[in-house]
Length: 304
Image (tube, rainbow, N blue to C red; front, side, top):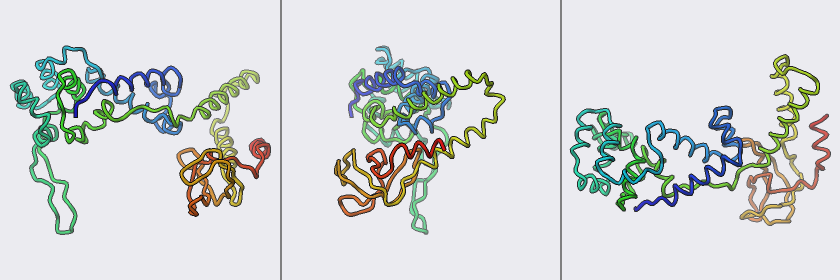
């Protein structure tokens, strides 16, 4: 596998675009919003990319190095400085460029240095299960902590990395940003973010109008009452007629289906219908329009 800067450049540009367009990402970075909240509005991957950038920034590396990282001596230093075991620090510094480059096509050797040599390999137990095996504690931690400089070195020198090395669990999530994983704007719940901002703004204006200090209120009661009202309306009764407004594999746009039930999953409503294959399956409620219950009735249930 030969890596390039194309994928990581795309991800960096998408990340900057998301920072400019979606305040929730900045709020996540600042710590005022949790990962669960970012995930609920479809921005989990952007939050993960931030963690990738933050982790390697703490190690002293940026995803795209300058051309000095093409020099093997600079890569060796980065790996050795990130390795704690003295004999392995010496081992890395004494490694020749030829042998190091060859190691990138030898997954077993790379695995031994990255994860530690095997003390006992995985084996079949009498119970029929496979044991995990055990490894020595000493390893070249720099192959994990300095994986970004290593990737840059490989790109700048046109060196191929064995696919099995890229699949190593300790480094796979980081390497993916360079060749497989692309940040996507599809699935981002902009409506929820917009409504939440408007709701907070309206609440702030109400406090200001009534000249109320929020710290004098019982916030637990307020949050509980709001949650109860929303949860009460957040369901679809069995037998409700639903018109499909977003086609899926076994749903036809414009066709009417009958709800069999519903439930909330990760903050979104899923509804069960008998689809065109004749099976009951759950689909996002956003794929339908409720033609049985008027929106005015739902609003009255919230306000009543």
